[in-house]
Length: 266
Image (tube, rainbow, N blue to C red; front, top):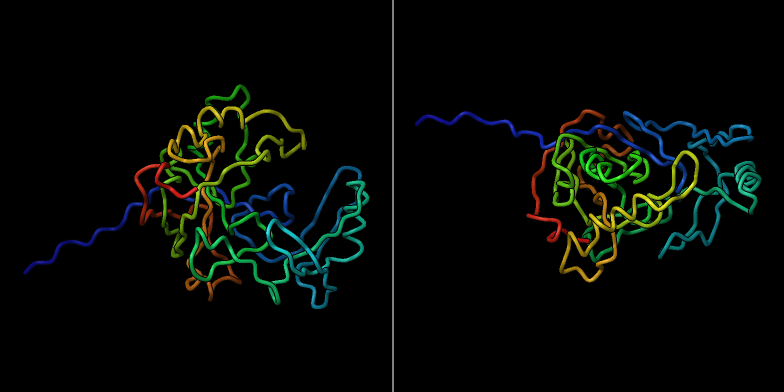
């Protein structure tokens, strides 16, 4: 009895960029992978601030709050606090998540099991596609960069907004799970190079990507969506988290999906 030839799955896209955000709400950095090194912070008129990410002893800052979570964090020191206070004109403190003693769980209404995040708004990863950005830019007088949407993983080679419906994907050998569509605040309206805000792209998103349009049965009709939050298969990552995880150019395989944006969680 003859056996059929094995088939190799066809990638649905590939990773075109990876972005990290060493400091919450500051500009992202495009990388091919993410080694553990010093973080250098620069600003106009300021000396560069170097923050060591591998300090052996640090002070603890208490009562640090991000949305619903409050806990302790590592204080990055007086020099960093003074640097940000001087530049921003208000008292600031630079802190780092204290993963040795703190846990911040993702929303259990959307993700079951052992999944956590750090100082991100809600989930460890945000994925978007270049094709979705291209489709949006067709409606804009002045095209914008993907940095307005602050994804961690940018993919290309798929249909516009197809990432909406991906519920499980594999990048290289690691599995990621689509959690929910990302509804956007005012951050995309802020030019990441100048810090100046404007009306776009949110006005166009309201006309093309609002809940009323892509999720007609959704109660949140005035929310606008771009990209999808992702979490990972933590059992696969447990032995790899200290090393390189994914690389630019890596294939993206879609293992499970729903049929439309209306069926995706949001």
